[in-house]
Amino acid sequence: MRLYEMSRRLVHETSMAFHRYLLPAVNWGNRLICLKGAKGTGRTTFLLQHIRESFGEADDKCLFVSLDNIWFAAHDVIDLADWHWKHGGTHLFLDEVHHLRSWQTVIKNIYDSYPSLNIVYTGSSLLQLESKGGDLSRLRVPYTLPCLSFRENQVLEIDYPQIEDVSTATIIKAKKMLMVLAESVPQTPRMAQLYRELETDRNQGLKILKALARAGLLQLLSSQKVSLKDMSRPEKIFLDNVNLMHALVRDVDTGCARETFFLNQLRSAWHDVTYPAQGDFLVDGKWLFEVGGKGKKFAQIADVPDSFVVADDIEVGYGSKIPLWLFGFLY
Image 1 (cartoon, one colour):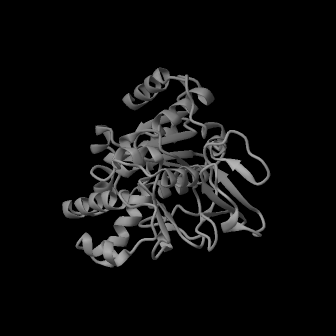
Image 2 (spheres, one colour; image 1 turned 60 degrees about the horizontal axis):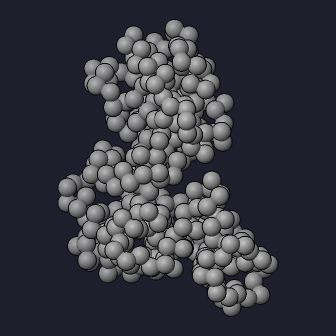
Image 3 (cartoon, one colour; image 1 turned 90 degrees about the vertical axis):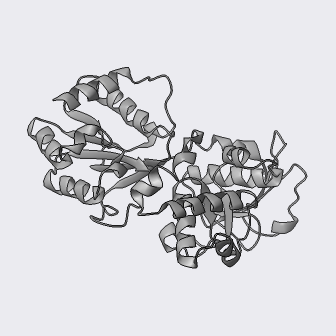
């Protein structure tokens, strides 16, 4: 079959010179694995490198296919899974599942029908894994690759319409919201004012805001640990990363950049970060952090247990004062 030839060729031509940090952290023994990430984060290369390391370059027990391949315009994914399993296949790698209609139901059917088949699938960071069709939330083990390039700026025009039923007008509003927020983050948002400026209502405005967060463009901070799905309004809004700040904002505020970097690094390393009553960030419900320059004092978090100052422009920490640059080694 031509797909097997293509799979072997892609594996053979994949460079092994550089690995994303997540590769050795994935438990590949799980039967259903989901890998999410924005465009340019390296999802496809990530899978191909794993296949080459674990199966070699010509092992037909594993099959890698991208669901944006024109082959699937006339063929069914379930039929492919059936063929693969009947011919000794043990692992099926499905790239770009957001190109497949009813993808959750399809994957759930494959998972249920072929108990000996291991499935790994990738998709846009916009994927809502717990909604519509077959619910995979109880079955799949999710992993997320954080941003690596600026290609995620294409998400609003390419991935958003494929995953959500949105109009051109909604895409334009999403772009406008991103630019409005980019000029003023981090902020405690005045949501009603923001929605009026976008000429939209609360429901659509919140939906766009959450889509920008799932796309890896914004970080929404709440005072409690809560999923995006259940969040009614954020306490504070940040751009996702400092590179994005410099791409969208002419004059980046240094203090804003420090906080954005800290939040991005902690969340990329799978820590829960919330907005506290005192200080800047509460991590994993216990550790309180205040972020600032080298002269930052403890006044705002004085006498709070397990509290720390994270300071920029210092090389070595002392006491409860930690250099900001050290958090860049979290992943």
